[in-house]
Amino acid sequence: MVCKRLYESLSEALHGEKTVFHMPGHLGGRGLNAASLAHFGLLDTTELPNTDNLQYATGMLKAAQERAALIFGASKTHFLVNGSTVGILAMVYCTVGRGETLLVARDCHRSVLNALQVAGAEGVFIENTAEMDDPFAFPSGPNIYSIQEAVLANPHAKGLLLTRPNYYGMAIDLGTLSDFLHENGMLLLVDEAHGAHFPAHASFPKTALQYGADLVVQSLHKTLPAPTQTALLHEGSHWQGVRTGLPVSSVAEALAVFQTTSPSWPLMVMMDDAVHWLQESAHAAYAALYAQLDRFEAGLRKGGTTVDRPASADVLKHVPMNEQKDLPKVEQKDVPVNEQKDLPKVEQKDVPVNEQKELLKVEQKDVPVNEQKELPKVEQKDVPVNEQKDLPADDLKREHLRPDTLRDRSRLVIFVPGNGLAAEKDLREKFG
Picture 1 (tube, rainbow, N blue to C red):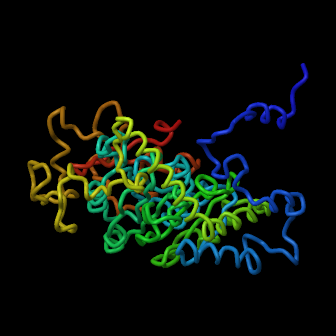
Picture 2: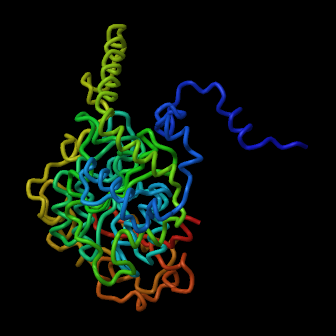
């Protein structure tokens, strides 16, 4: 049997594909810089005295990254040649250490779980609480109130990691969330892999950097004309640097741990091409796209078809969570969740969430998830997760916190909005 070369097989598989509705954003090469493609072989070089070094950029790469930071509104931007995955690994590693806690929206990328394992950290996952708050009935992740509740119930957490936009293209309005987190001593990390195009047009949602996020990852190849694996890691204006006590002292040092020491120069050249396109040509391109969408929708309406989305060009911008009419309004953002008059009453309405030990002894139908018999038993089952901040990681005598293997060093805790209780599961059991 004669096996075809990979080039032949892939060419045949893609033959005739004219309309592209998938990544990468260069649409079959049509958006890539022709000169960069033509000189691919010449550009594919290495670290030389007259080039530069990505892990210690001092020349042309330093200038290219500074140019990207200026365009995206970051205090510092890092080129990523291993995709947003390496950026997520690095920003988690810069935020939490062994035995520490990171709040995570449940609709996160799988690399977040790997990052928690590598860091030996605990993930408190905030469940999706707005399953049907979009007219298309797409799950839109945790809303602003469940996030606030999780923060108040886990004061020992070091930060919050959100996926924005989510995998359905909806971007939660972050409002003053970064200020609220900073006031509570937490960082805001955002996986904005599908939002690198947000700065291109006013009809798009604001970027996480504009909302004051500390660290943000964006994939250039998902929505901009750039090759697969190209991404950026931004340090926001509020980022104060890596705190003492963590294994690394800077974002660059964290990237040196996870990113290849042989970065592709053609990829980096085309990343700079994509950033240049974003600055010079993107606005006109997206304006033309929105004009096409308006004409298309107008034609549908003229033919009697009902169009659910707005008639304006702002069709990709999700309704902010805190403006949706189905959600209760909270005037005082710092009011403890169990005292907010519009929220469902609980039996001990005046008892702070982290003191509700009595809730662990209730009838079967209200048994917290971490006491249900099908879940693995833990030795300190009566100690609420949000009260364990003073216990050193080595004193938490749980089987899945053994330091002998990397996979056994992390904990998955599911935060249940509405009652402040949490469930604990072994990462091995949950994710294989």
